[in-house]
Image (tube, rainbow, N blue to C red; front, side):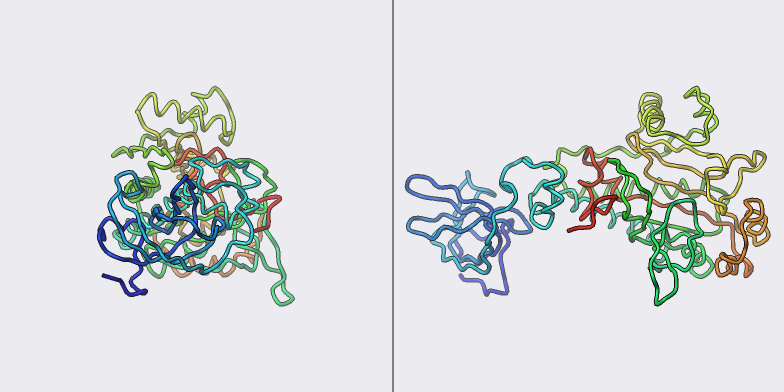
Length: 425
């Protein structure tokens, strides 16, 4: 039986076609030459297929794209327990340059700069590709949980008229002769949309012009944001965060091949994630500061692991001086906030909290910081029209994936990183 070309068979599907003549297409992953026979290994989106070829044959360059027709037979030693024999090979696209390193090697024999400089090709390596497949699964899990809780997906502008949201540096640009900026987050817009849909979420890029050159910072990253109304306080937001994280971990768990390839260990998400107030964290650390240093985050994560057996820890009540003006203060202790960070394996993963929701509170908060109201006019109009108590959070996708797969640099969990030095490819 010959399948019509539009019924292309994938490598992973070959075991179901033993005794049939099939057509498959993919990249030349490797050619293994023996004395009397050679094996052409083809790679497609589902995995690897072994093709038996005999001399004479034209030597194909690795990463050339081919279409093959041949008979599927059983061979327990071949990938998937099958191989294709008697092939006819059609070259669809010849690779005129070799890959920057051997993509067939089980590990990645290249430095980070080489990987990033040649990303369009190097990301074809199964190990490098796997992390991004897990990222896609994580985003699908994020969406699934929030949609199940009545959230509406939104898409907000990434170019804004004023750089007003927080202290982070911003990228400026020319917008038809007017100054404009790349959005640091969708925060203002998602709060506005709480007044429309009540529960909203977004996945998209955000931009921070902070001149960091570390293994944990990027100038552009993917933020998974959610905001919802009619909450009691930030504890309701933390309950939603826990549900989202559990859903993301569950979705990633449905990609066992990639997890096994990367030797990635899924965390267990406890029914109730432990939490520690910032003031108590400072006492435990023996410090008096208004923020946590990376070393503090690692130390507190170790404490949560030892004390609760949890790889997740909420730090609540950050000082108001380190939180944006729209953050709701803690009742009875206004120097602290109804906000939180979620630490995961020693790294801040999520920031969130309860927001102010009354117009007069926004006027007072901006006045207290000595800021004029005019740059915030369109934002403040939202609260003049009436808004429910609300809150939300933002999750850095690349940080989540990097921690999940044990990458020592966030760039290994990022397609085409943008940082202090890199604008290409």
